[in-house]
Image 1 (spheres, rainbow, N blue to C red):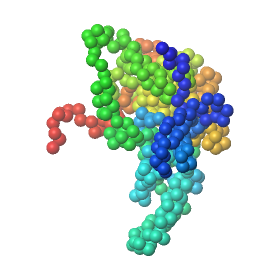
Image 2: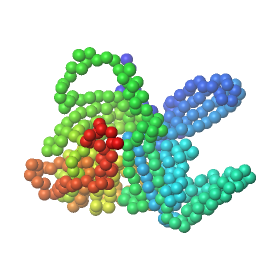
Image 3: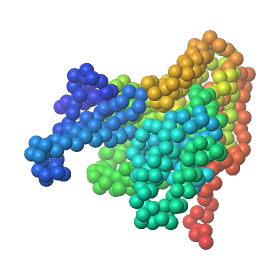
Image 4: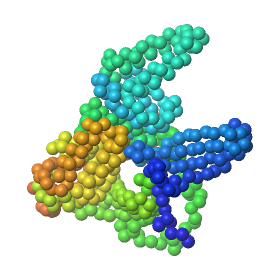
Length: 451
């Protein structure tokens, strides 16, 4: 039996000219030109600082027909993303935009929408989006004027409105609604907060899951049909889940190679139960951990403020839930809940993971596509953050604001109060409950029909 743990390789590998083993796959497929069988070659690769792609090359030896295509190989994120940006200056028009295959572009002021089916994924800027729309509408106008003058006149009026919008006659808002979570709008103030740009994450509904190719109910039914019958011996295990480590197969979030995730229910002293999931990939060496609350949403939100005054503070245990906002006022820095997900680590480990993710996941702030000015700001920010991590700077405040109340920072003086840490429990606002999905949740008499 072959040991897959030592032979597994990344599914998507970096695109390199000197790769000795690109691992192209050849399959026989029908030629759409002559009906005979030709050969399709598939290459799964990764463009540095961008994303995974699938290169397809077809050639038919019977009629000589050739065809080349590129498809996105992006992994679907756990949640979708909703990006909103106010465009009011020429600099805003030049913001870079990464639009995935599944993203919808909207301009609310014009009551205008570009559905995902009409345009494949692309890298462009705000001005480029408007320019393509104008060019597309103008292209068919001559024929439209001959066949339907009334509609052509209305479209001419809308084109003029688009041109005025492109010339910034009035500020407008561009919205990217992407259920796959793989779209970006450039943050001009990176790594600081951009006041003109907002980002939120949402759980996909059934229709959005189907759009990105996820069919949960169908997969559950297939798994149930294929699941072997369990004997009493198979089900006889520890009654207490806290004593058991569960294992299940998954794919590496970095290279997509098959790997294994370990999951365990554990209890944090002076806090609550949490579920810890850890994944190690033998193919690329990537290690990740994620934390989910085992006790649901708390009655109140929690805001934890720590002033770093000693190197030992970096060793404090931290549980940052997936609903937690992280702020460092001295760096004018804030990240939303979707940036790091849930993590259980030390304060040092959390800050290092945050630094690595900010400089490694968004192609608009790192790599070849990032402007020199942004790279310089990111380098300066990383240096300041590194000084905090290495305890060269003291007095920095690190704030965890979690409306779900599921985040925790170790009190090294427990059960006494920690003089350097302030913990405040607060009542959630309507906006907090809306973000957590509580406003639409019916928890009493839910079996009764509302009407």
